[in-house]
Image (cartoon, rainbow, N blue to C red; front, side):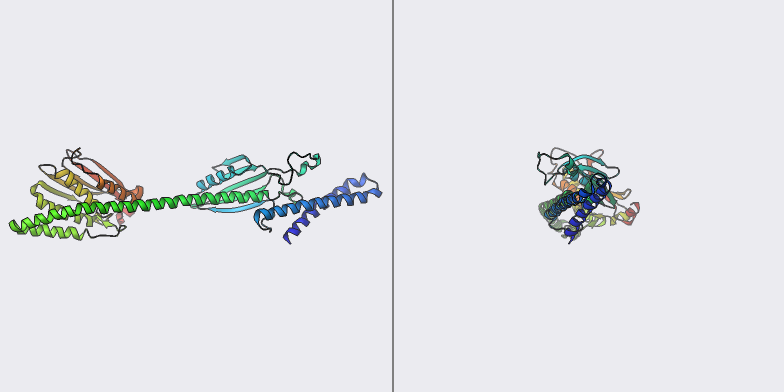
Length: 417
């Protein structure tokens, strides 16, 4: 019924226009005897031509859209497309989609006003190229189509208003059709936007999968590192405690107490669980107290951490890694030993945690493999992204100072935000 009404409407409009012209012009040029026959014959031909042209339009719309209704039949098509990108990205996407449209030419885009205008060369699907044409029929030759796209910001998303229409005045739609070419343009641009959004989403998903894989690899490296370091530390501690039970039972008891405290804070956690600076500080202190019994006066410890900063969230074992590096690569190789400092300072929304020593400093010998520090950097990146920093520099007059800067998760830090 919709198709019939559309064909009937175009044929009736053509006949009405012809009747008006005939009444005004031809009535004074032809004798009355011939006027009626000429008008009726010409009207029949014109009505048949208009009906056939409209029928071709309907058939091609059905071919393009798969259905014929009030939304697909008009020559002027409008689409409202929601894109899950901010307005600038949405504009770039729609601009690229229209530029790549077949036959696109005379494109004008204005990023400030978020508008794109383009002329699109219209094919003549039912006109044989190169065939001789009457000049009178040039009026029916395909005119260019045009596209207007406007992006409206919508928070974190962009809304695109897409208009595809013939490059002629609207009243001509009563007599002329576009054979579904603007419907094709609207569908093509919509498909291009959908494809680009899907491609972006696939890229984000691939990146997310890669990040998960990197995180799993980092956790595996950490597990391997702990499996290599902790047994060595445990064996040495237990061996030292065994010797002390014969010569100095009180110190042996103190060493075992510190070992119990260290192990209590080293129980396995889920890989996503966060610790606190206070808990990590207790673990590091227990570790250093054990080593102080073994190293004696060769090891000194200074801790300056305000009480209110002990609630700051920190990935587990991160402080421990820096303390172990200070001992193994800084003070143990140095004949006279030295001091380890653990400092914490609050900034504007951040907390800087420093582990420093006055050991042998950076050296070509005994510098380790660097796995621990690489793990520190990687865990900071996976946990905080760009919001955390890690630096390691030479200490004055000797030794190394390593600093971790993380967001302040306490109420005091939130006040800066």
